Length: 140
Image 1 (cartoon, rainbow, N blue to C red):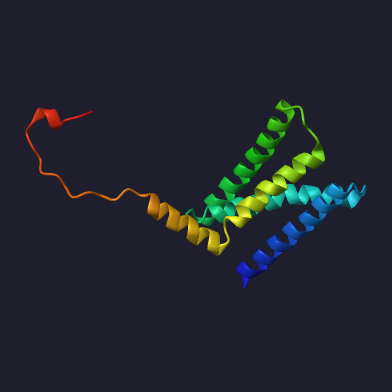
Image 2 (image 1 turned 30 degrees about the vertical axis):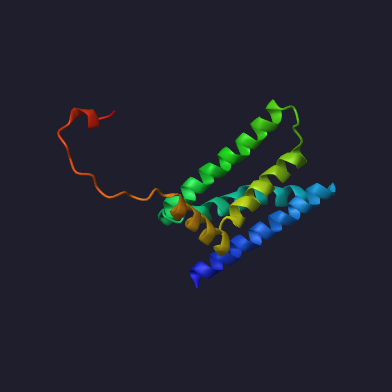
């Protein structure tokens, strides 16, 4: 029950944050918009990235996802500033797009296809060659 409750809280936080992103994109000036946007920037990328880190234990996953969220926000801001296209709304939309990509990567169909592509990309091992003492076969 506890896991389901925390999952619902995260879903509610992401949904409220997405509403804040919608308000920001629409240009609605409201004190609630700032709180919802902050909630989105703090929770949504963290949840999306944590879902990609399934092999870690829960605490390590949380810490890595929080740090990745901070890095993501910083990199988006630095790239936009370096390219002289900084806009808070466009930065928010860029973070929302990256978050959506991270969430889309967790869809079971996408995960199965990615796993199949990874298996297909692995080189097939050839039959083992007999060891020879010839020094011409030794290549570095």
